[in-house]
Length: 156
Image (cartoon, rainbow, N blue to C red):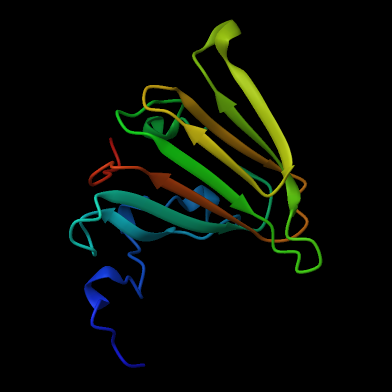
């Protein structure tokens, strides 16, 4: 395939960072996920984090005690979460039910439930997670986008 004069702005091969591999989720989703941008890697000047993965069976992201960095947390940057269904007859049909938790612990915490292709915007400072996938009937795409996040590192 011919390269564009703007090739420096194109990521044709997503990063697959080994430190993002989560063995307990490998049978339920793409592991490690596909990272299309992480700060300035591989696109200099982008300053974003963009992760995409396929989910193909019931699972929970952000609830394993061995991974405290994936428990409810907040960031200093805005983040967007996007879920896309794979039904060509009805792209709005997610093919699963998803719970996405927002807010601080206790009464301020809220569960958002959906079964359609959905986008959730998480402003900087708002706690979020876990994500619970239920009744997954067919693969769905999940993306997380850290806006002006710089490089995102998995924490220990």
